[in-house]
Length: 398
Image (tube, rainbow, N blue to C red; front, side, top):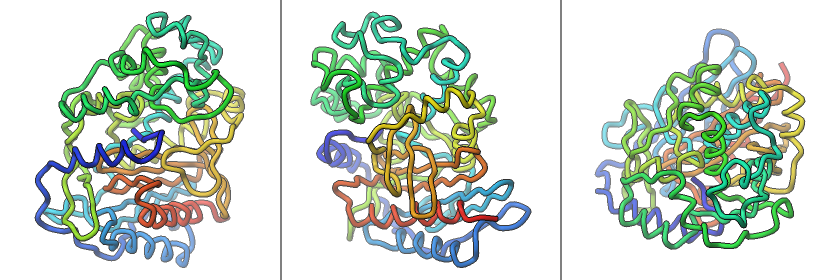
């Protein structure tokens, strides 16, 4: 669940999460470790060395994450690189099967469900809120599914509402029904005329999830399993309601320079983000998902062409290179080539996942600290370097 209107909301949420007891032991910072699947390693030795050094530098920062894991996948060859630890108290190393909050990469999952249903004729990109969700405000009635997926809807962001912020401060462990999330902005005007411009909004994907429920007659979680997790064999991906993490997991932290990390793994209920950022997965599953999603394994190339009619806009936090926004997806044009995917942040975690359009080359970067690109400028620059180098490691020719 990323912020959309500046940094104040992120700072306030981080402050709330900071009431947890501080972890006594600081993270150790071993040099990066790499584990390759059978076959040739991904990328050249020099490229991987630069990536590994950048990961070590990120973790070594006084304001850096206690841990980072990068998955680089080229064809049938997968390489997993880690630096730091999954748990600063025990010093346990990060594993590719550790659970983690994927934050706003969950929006790519809601895009995957919705576009699969469009491909099967059960939804249309032209379907409107008024048609599918008539209980939502009349002012939102003409907003289409396509506009929701591309953040060109104008629907105000519930995570920026003062009432919502007070609610999560008062009851951070108590989830809310999805319709309740949107109730915080039900009396607000649209931010702009639908389709006239881009503005990232967490409300968009909650509405997408509600549309999925309306047409399938089942919960969004069940639809997510049927149309995404099952066909892509995502065996450790779920949409919980509460704050508890499945075991084992990468612990997430609040990090401030000169202070010990503060545990944030289970300080907010996932149901406070739902389809906009509540999914829990693993680096292995996230890698499998992004390859299948971008590689058009869930819906056809004709629909993907519509998905990739891009507008000016960036994910939150911005991904590497030059960003542009599609339907439930972003294009990242880097110095080494172009990939498509999503980013996200949530208390304790920041994520990046992207792949080439053939689905054969992919990268995921997961760190155990929330990074606000507007506030945490130095650590964000270090993270962006890791992401860029990871893309370069995935994209060179054979």
